[in-house]
View (cartoon, each protein chain N blue to C red):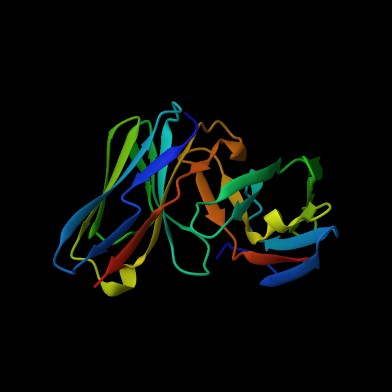
Length: 114
Length: 113
């Protein structure tokens, strides 16, 4: 299996809802990432997990809460989001020891906040 | 601050021609530079990378050139095909202590028949 699987593919949520995005990989990668991508813009890094520990938080608002239950799973818990948080949320994993080819991206979750 | 950017937002080429997509970067501490292709509705797909101590690297139909003197990165696609139509992002990676991959602004490549 050489894929990163993200669910759901599409999500519409209200500003008072709580939802979670899920990401799964079975490539044995020990680093996992969340990116946010707005239309016609590059992906922006949100969080990095390395060996199941949060190693980078790019000053993301607390309404986004990441979780890495094990080496294959990465979640992003959402609460009290704003309409401007609507975007494509991408998950990636890497086998990182210094080679860019190690990054594999999922197809993303298209999130709409209403 | 440090940034990675592209000169041309849209590039149109004829099928069969060679394409050149350019990128300027400013973070001299980056260890790797990578090109990604993103098609509509999909995540970025790795194309080719180059380590910071190299000048050129070739893949299948693609070549990446790195000019550290002027902090410039380019992607050359030979014999461009309709399937090459996509948005191309350059990205730079700083490794160690939590690897960080930062994307540039992107170029839309349109291949005309």
